[in-house]
Amino acid sequence: MGRWRGQARAKRVRSAPGRFFIPSSPLLHFPLPTVYNSSIPKSARRNPGMKELVEAVREYGVGIGTDIVKVDMFLNHRMDTELYVKIGQAFAAEFARFEPDLVLTVEASGIAGALTTAIACGNIPVVFAKKSRTRNVTGDVYESRVFSFTHGVENRIRVAKQYLPQGSRVLIVDDFLANGEAAEGLCQLCKQAGAQVVGIGVCVEKSFQPGHQKLAEAGYRVHALAKVTGIQDGRLIVED
Image 1 (cartoon, rainbow, N blue to C red):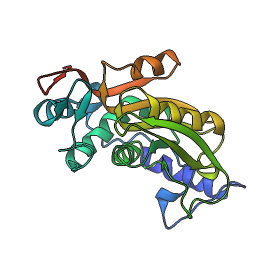
Image 2 (image 1 turned 180 degrees about the vertical axis):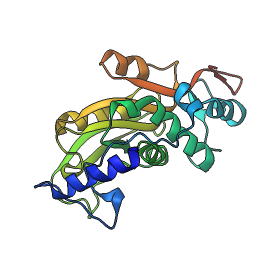
Image 3 (image 1 turned 180 degrees about the horizontal axis):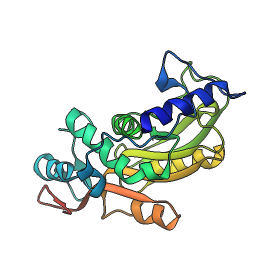
């Protein structure tokens, strides 16, 4: 039923003045209909946590020093595609009820999780903020500064204004949450656009750093699929 309702909504979008629709590419029109994907397993709807991700972090993750979490075996260098599909389903189970219009992330590690989440939420668009102003980014942009904890550098992130419409309901998805700099930068872009952040989903959260608390205190709904509470002798301590 949701599928047909989505098609009816798409027809209205196509005929609405001032909006565009590309019939041959259903993923490239906005605003897209928000349809809860009925293919999401019922178990995922009841339990939006990610047992598989927790187990992967525990088994394959590595701690470096006291604050570096290395999960590139399956998340942000070599990517486990089956795991990423389940990540998208878990985020949809948590956030689809808030009816996001699009998923927003930052290049490059956040894109995979954002894509599977957008598909699970009913094929809504993904917009990723760029860290460099390339020649194909033309026209007006929203821009904010983000400090990367992992790389120790400050980046300017940008989104073309046409891809973050005023009034959009935005779900932010990223691979990591440490001090919350990336998520805060994406929230700033949404504020500039007059868009509403309906939630922030992160694959792995370092709970011993202040990112989650800062975002929650700012009024954002934050959901992490795996929480690393500490590092001991190179081993990650992960909350069940």
